[in-house]
Image (cartoon, rainbow, N blue to C red; front, side):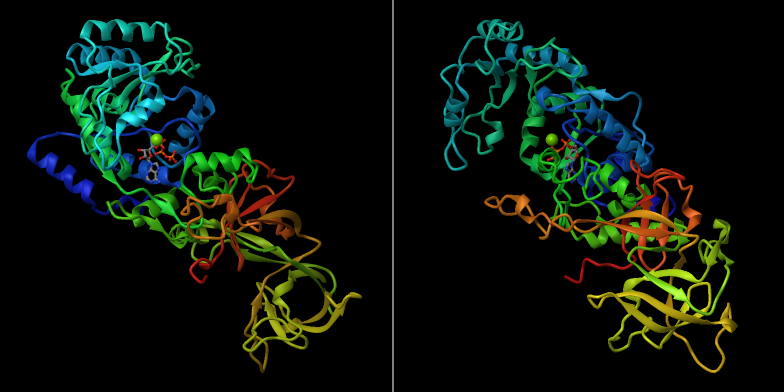
Length: 553
Ligand code: ATP
Ligand code: MG
């Protein structure tokens, strides 16, 4: 965690520094409050790094709390995946996992307290009527005809709501605040709704469920959260957060601070839309390596260290946070550069026959030029090789340094080789090169001439076949969901996944799933978590290319 450990300052750290200096708090407690209604995405990774990172840096605590107030959309699978993702990113929450549903009894009692104080009432308006009464940004709302029910009446009705005596949606409990407020969130927001839905934790105990805004502030307070950090769209909800806590007998009053959401170009950061990609089978599940989910990034080969470094680089502020994919890939590449052993793979093979060599030879080669401790392996050479098809050009463009007819290149870790003949199929495609080596050039420069180009190759006899999955951006435009009138599916990149059969060197044969390599000259690759079998079917995902391929277009 060396470089990722040094935290850059931001406005939230400034606030915390002030709170600690003034004695307002002696230590901090933050929380990460996902709803278990989907897998976490890169935006959540930013929030995780922020909340858990603050707790770590200030020797405070960070709770993991599930906001499980929408039973129809939530599942155990999602809750488990979220815990796995947080841990994989390198963080551990304080104590047990918390659930908003742990507080359903408290939340009910606090609602009764609000009713008793004349600050909440049961409303019978239909959802359509309620919308009509709410007014608009320009127009004040109107009071519901049920707003002046007595405390006794409200207490009885709320108890009957809880007891299941009314149909779903027939009534709601609302806060009594101000229908003329310029902030629509303060126009008597709903606190409880009737919904007969099975809940992953409380089963069928409840048929009324508390609303998010009401639940969130109380959960924060009950857990003694000091700094409740959320994204900017909740800024207008902050007065409600404070109103609820100001009007209840809870000693703790956390402060809410908002930062801007991460948007990553060429992808989407909305669980709802990611779910659509999954259910429509446009991708192969939540952890498809093209997905901006944490599990997708993991499967693609991104490292937790790289993602944390990304979070550090994008920073935390209140201004727009629309980030170029190159920033993410740069952080990942830098991490992989230092940790991934380097081996050879050929992903677009062209057969090469060496006409003046017999037998076989192996030479030792290091796994990493700067890390001798990674060890070395044997690199094989024999008369039948494969090279990358695009390392050969029959008609070379200007400045071409790789192989051409009559030209020479160095085979990496091996001899200098000249191409003598290109063999073509009936359609005129080059299908084989016949080449010869200079026997005097094994590990030595040739006499009397310079050979500039170096290409990689594999010995067919020693190489292993492998499935190699090449990923490109998932969408063809930077902001696929920017235009409300165009379905973001329209912008799916039909070429976001290309599967090729290539070759890898034998040194990777027993690699476990999730092992990372640099394939020299090709990029960073990771054995697939699901489909790769050590010693069996080899499957590699391209994590990222060696150079930035995003900023050019
Ligand atoms: P989505 O719209 O994708 O469902 P959400 O905000 O509804 O996101 P939650 O599960 O409620 O998802 O989010 C948990 C936490 O992650 C919240 O504190 C939220 O503010 C934060 N978060 C979600 N998306 C982003 C994002 N794009 N950038 C930064 N933080 C985010
Ligand atoms: Mg949410």
